[in-house]
Length: 234
Ligand SMILES: *Cc1c(COP(=O)(O)O)cnc(C)c1O
Image 1 (cartoon, rainbow, N blue to C red):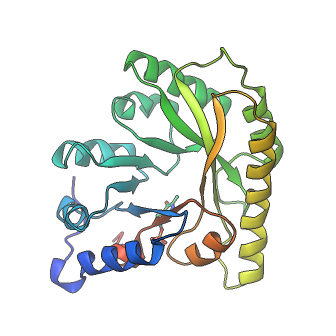
Image 2 (tube, rainbow, N blue to C red):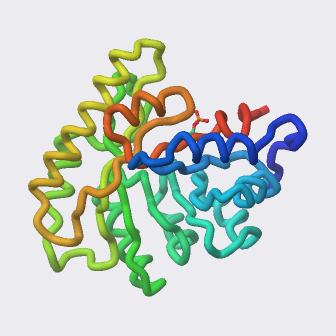
């Protein structure tokens, strides 16, 4: 696979990771370093600075990188996931952030069973005003989380929610959207009454809005370009 040919000199990944981890000290938020499009050398540099959680949005890219990195890396699938690709990541994925249908959840359960695992998942909820982003409506997320009965789908666990805010400079709007997700998170946390559904992780915030997300209660921020530099899709 042809990743970006990033000049490692141009960006001090170690320094960025260390500064980020320091800024999270004493907070309840953890960093997922989003390494999509970036070469394994850059992931290794972040690993050496102490980072263990990495996010990728494409199955093929994650499957390609995973064997090239130490086994204690925790791989987070943060992009849209097609059911027919679940089998490739089921043996090792740490957390799927992007469950947006019951069908996908069932497929993850089936493939996790084959791999002899239980896979942790987040429900992706559509909170942005833009209609370009994937995700369940608040109501659909509520139904999926609360509709899961104790004996059902024993190889998946819903451990929280993920969302993306609108790409805008309007901080009030971003906070409003994150706040909406946090309220659903709190509501489902109270309502869920068995161990298949637990609201432990709230995945929200990217390079441009992670500070706002943290103010609104994020436990996982997914940060790419602020650590690894701008992506070049050319
Ligand atoms: C790319 C991506 C990120 C990281 O974006 P940055 O703006 O580079 O921090 C976070 N979440 C998802 C779902 C992404 O696809």
